[in-house]
Length: 453
Image (cartoon, rainbow, N blue to C red; front, side, top):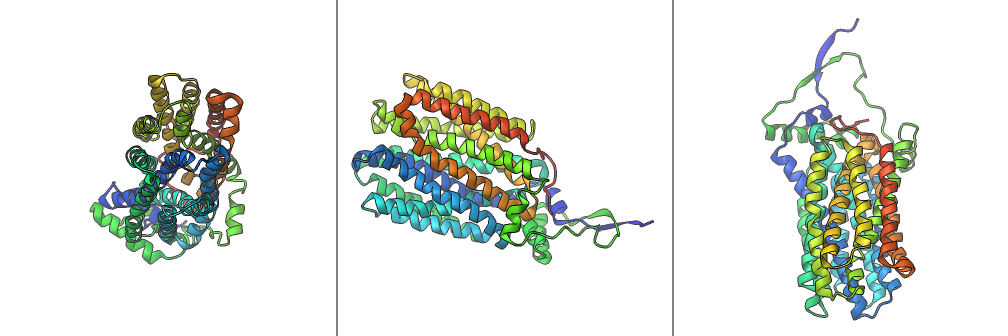
């Protein structure tokens, strides 16, 4: 009979037992800056499209491509970013994605025609698409299990900060002159410089380092978090059986990691996750990219349209706050499905709203429920896979979602011609409802340790 002895706690156990410290806050805010930049870029494009449609006399199909080409880059970036992050680490991919984003966004301010703008929008999407799934994976690997979901929702709340900044720039800067949209692009590029500096100062994920056999580095980083919390490394009771605590080998090749997403253990999760990501992206980007343009088409001028959008955007923050609370009370699946169903109802109401008060109220409801759903979705996604597959799984789910975000802006013009805003937003509501059903195929790991295989 093997005698139980005290053994050093694993990296995962040490991270999960920590209280929230300043170092956690630094990881959260450093990653959140990139998240806000992504939101600011997507938000600015919705305002810039409305301005360029008038200034450059663009057809609806041309304006749709300004939005969609960025999402083509995002789809590729998300898929590649996850693979690269599982192979080379989280932090390096962070900095690279923001560098690509910053250069392409700044250069967009100098374009003189649609063709070059589309090329640069692709590269902006490439950088930002890789950033989001890697960021959520990174923060989830530092977060203690008992508050992991809440921290990821708070990370997602930086989206509201970025979108609000975009709405303010759209309201205050873009209508000010013919070059207002150029200044908007320049303002979007400046924070990327700061974000790159912040990202390089962040530590690599100890879980990833541990999984790659870089145990000493993982231990050193984990100790800095323990020191910040005023705790010491602990031991855990375990049988002294050689190899018992050794994890199964990680998939090294990209093809092996992709195949691993469809192993029997994960195939239902992967299918459900991809369905949710596809449907949520389709409805969110189809609606929010086009809201300013739709309002202008309904007779509101640019300034009033952008003002409405700013008010609608402000409802994102309470949506995140409620989701952050509920996700550790109700769990992941119930929170996600309830917010998706709320999004479906709000979409129908917004599509049929008439009058300024109704437009603002229903738009705020759509913003509240939809962004709360996004928070829950980003919280649950990294939890579906073990460490060796986590960034790959998150990246490919986001990549599938980006396919929908490519299609959605292109689908809006014909749907508007078919039946106007009511038909358009009923379609969005149907996609939200499908996502709510698919959410029940996901695993709910509230309060559980991450799988460190």
